[in-house]
Image (tube, rainbow, N blue to C red; front, side, top):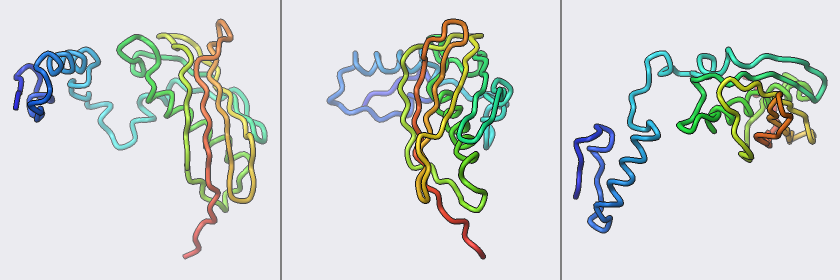
Length: 175
């Protein structure tokens, strides 16, 4: 078993004797470079950090039945180690916009259960970029609603991310 004292998060790892020391070192260097071993700042270590990280960057442009358009400013808190919008932030925004879009066609008498969220990362959204996030209902029936969300860079119109969400429409239980 090999351990290291370089970073506390990796120092407690159990490493198989089958893993060459060079591989172990490469993995720990990668984790350090990506910031995986850093402590989460107190302002971001909350139960629902969506509001703190993304809430101030997402603004609604328009709402129609089955369609929502928003503007998103890519700020430092949602960047990855390479300077582009972090995939988790893309997923969070895609989920929230998809839920809001689905709510324009699915009544309040039904709960929405997210069954699937698929995202294609096509290009980066750099720091301070303005991204137009458009969501539209692809299909909505009695039991299922599918929503597509497109992320386009406002300046160039280039498609950065595509997301597709499948929601199960479930009757709200009466207690």
